[in-house]
Image (cartoon, rainbow over all chains, first blue to last red; front, side, top):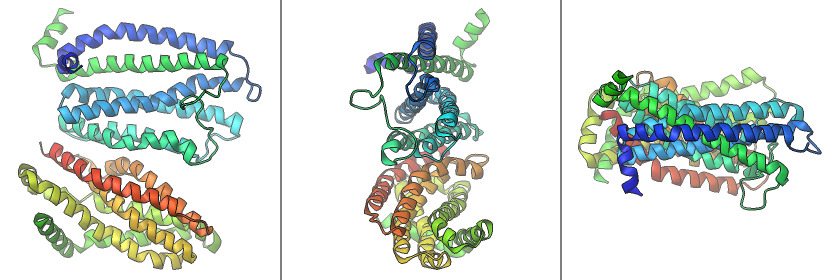
Length: 245
Length: 221
């Protein structure tokens, strides 16, 4: 595996690799996003208790799950950057951070919009809501830390370190609904048992989940390519590429 | 071990000469505590209910206040750079920093806790629970604030950034500590929460010093 991965540490190779992946990822992301959301929002049966407002789960649940998934991906990239001292992995950390922050914000906002009719309030200081908010602050911390150093290289490394330390929050968010019995409902899909949701609602949800994952990958590839060009702007291969166009 | 002793002696001597470094956070702790009854009203029952949270938040903020300057002087005059260059001295230095930070900020809070309990009319079980959680939690506060100080040591605007980075990491601690005190004030067993606090402390004691070392290395290079 390392033989296959090793060349990707080189910025130029990674740039072209991401460029090849990007159209596939973006295409399939848009396709699954349209499929999952149109199916989920338009054609699934109405819930017997919550009526039509439950449909927001097709956005809320995928973005919430992938906000943690993005953090994990960011932390793995950060760990790689710190242990093997790979510059491109540092750029990957900073490429993923804003996407993860937006996913977290989407999860929080859609959750609030759902909470108003269902719980009767926009916000409660529930364990899961609070820990999700903290996840948002962690993303902000990584981004702010990167910007706080006059030396870009130091900023990127230190941000990677913080990303690795912050992983501690992921299990806390995931198990918060089991450790504290509060207003937010327990896990429906992400557990080692039969999902407690009807198959007719489950399938579009799983497709939306896949869509958010693909979109995350596509956007990360796009941002990573930009970061590579920005950081390598004095290298001959970048100059050559720019002058060709 | 010898090196740890030397560094600890140095840190303590510095603290003895710079009294404001450890006196100010303690005074800050007391002032924040006195502000709460003025802010939310002097109703004794309400204060008793709010006391665990107030004490813990005041502790978090006062530890944070002490954190900013932890590595600044040593970084400016090149001590950190020398220690990074002499590889084996860095870990004992970091451990001595953490321990002296706990002695100067965590321990005074622990010693003050009976007085605080009197001020807020806390019952005896809640007082014991607060003392236990502070005894287990303040080392973690010190560890994490030293980590934050190391991460931001060469940053341009360290202070406010430090709060943004470290406060989210304090939250698990805050949740379990105030849960323990709350359970104790209702007369329930709180050994479970204490066990989690012990686990958090041991876990961070094992890993945070290494993270501090690598943060210092990054900032020097």
